[in-house]
Every structure is written in structure tokens, then in C-alpha cells.
Length: 221
Image (cartoon, rainbow, N blue to C red; front, side):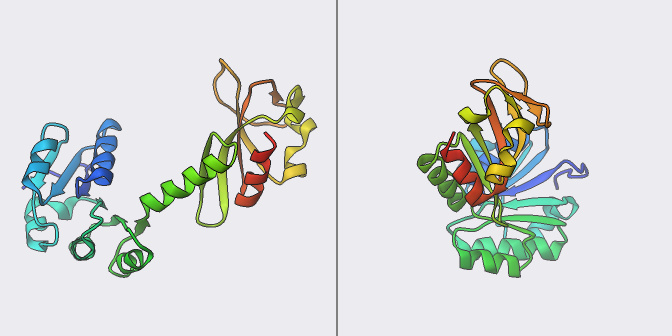
């Protein structure tokens, strides 16, 4: 049984491309990670990179309990192609009482099933990345994140009409319906936007608003 008494321990099930990246990132952020995979070779590859790695059938509720999974509050199920294992794993974690379950889905139907059996957060990493790249390729945004409710945040270059003016003077929100959240000048730290913030040539703007309006604004930058 693994000692999982710390609140920072996160369970990651499935060490494929997605699960492995999540586990590695969590470790870099200072979290203890208990990782599970059914493939012995995969477990061996990750054994010296993560806090705890175990070869286990993640659909086996009793085996999960013996490992100490019931003491963990947060879990990420990164199993993708084996939909049955993905669903049964979420079901087992829910029955054990894991408080917060994140699960990867590869199709909308898969996601609906995960939600129905107890996943608190269903994520579609391939679809999300594809959408993001499409926006970046077809627009002039340097970065882009879209939320489920039709809103987005983007990093764009300041348009010529805003250069040499304060944000209040350029009135970008009035003209384009986007809110400038922050400004990054060359060689300076990121600053939160205020009406009196001056925008200089080469500045980067972090803007938020309805997705369509953010896209239109990025087209002029």
C-alpha cells in the first residue's frame, strides 16, 4: 500500500502521451504523483521519474483500494483508446469515493458515458488542441484559449490604432467589444491593464471576450 496521506498526491491512470505528460507536469509543479498503468514496460520507463508507479488493472476496485487510492482526492484517467477500461476505471474511482475525477474522452459519446458514471470533468485534449491550432493558423493570434460558454482569451500584437495611446484613449472595448486584460511591453514584465495604461509599439495585449469578437479583433492587429 502506497502512503497517500498528503493532500498534494494526485492519481494518474494511464501513462500514454496525455497521461504521461500530465504526470510529468504535476511532478514539476511539486505534487506527489501516484501513477498506474497496466503495461509493465511503461511502468518501468516511468519508475525513476515519478513518486510512485504501479502496474495494476485500474478497473479492479479492490486492487485500487489496496494501493491506497481511497485516500486520494484527485484523479486523472488518461486512458483513451480502450473505452471500456476508461469507463470502468472512472466507475471504480467513483465507487471508492475519489472526490474529483478528471477523465480523457476521445469522442462525444465517450465523454457522455464518462460523465454519466461519475467523472467530474471530461476533457477532449485532441479536439481542444486541434481547435486551438486552427485559430492560430487562420488568424494573427499568438495564443488562444476558448471556453465552453463561447468566450475566449487571446494574446495578440497591439493594433496600430492603439500605439501611443492609453487604453482609455484607444477605446478598444467600445470599438471591438473585447476587454484588454493585460499588456506586455518588450523588455518589461506583464502588467494588468488599467485605463491609464500606455501602449507602445511592439506591445502584446491579452484580450478577452466573445470568441467571434476576439477573432475579429485579432484580424486587425
